Image (cartoon, rainbow, N blue to C red):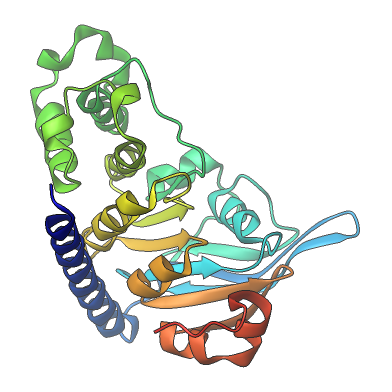
Length: 284
């Protein structure tokens, strides 16, 4: 592909992603006034001895929203995700998934309720093909994973669902390739496919573009922006160009506390954020 064609393809992907993000924002804005938040936290606090890692954190994400969580290294971003998913227990505060209090639930119980996360480092099955991996995830959700040894032909419905998920993430053509043979950007998309196989209501992405070459990251976020509009997305990302292009709202964490929440325009213009995190650069 020529440089001109690559530029055109990237521009098209970015435009499509921005349109999807805008649609998600409009949908979330419409729902936020009439529905309970898809995910909310209320006064979360967490300390390790004298080290405070979460200070009175309260957030409310509408259904279908695309939120970014940003902040300097050590701000508490991954800690907040760990609190939300149940990997860590808060010292105080509550977590709700829709109207349900999930504060006391174990991580796997939260997954079954529809709260799913991906990690900074990929956690895939290198010996399986992309299709086999997603079929396994679908089968687990359906309670059929114990029979997975019988092969794909024993699960035609699960295979059909898995292929549809992979196709929606532009992985259909590579579905029979081994996971370890996929390009790194494709592996991160496969992680998202595995998460989608669980039928999430809320999807938490911890640095989805970590380690992905820059020329693949735009495509990765285009796929994220184009996720079904009923799925709420909260993602951690250090690439501010990606954050300001794809997030509909941004939460800024500093020293375990929320400094500011707002639209990309509000965040970019705030002098405190620019001083603490953006280094004086204005985005948008």
